[in-house]
Length: 136
Image (cartoon, one colour):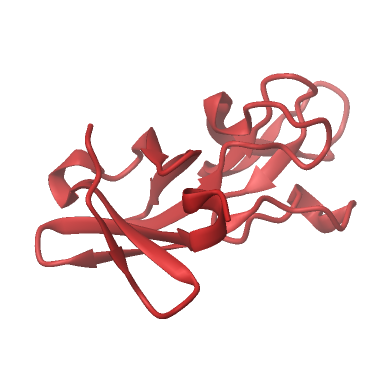
């Protein structure tokens, strides 16, 4: 999908990444924003955008599975929570909260690189630092 870029302030570049209907609830979609791959996720009707880069070992994290996470439980018991709100890295299975970008249970301080994503009418825009788009 081609993207249209416009400036949003002096240090950000805003890109149209699609129409709102392209990002229905539960959607996980990889888009190109300048030179970056960005995952756009619709969690309970709210859009979140993250760079396709795992802070653990640089994996393409946005290609991971979206689901829930398992809480500690008694033997033979499985308690799954936050269904549809957790992104699991495809390489080492690190789990990230899609609403914050932080690791699940905050056992590590590293987090996903988050970008601003907004709906304006029927259009969806993601803003990223200009230096990452223009190579400055």
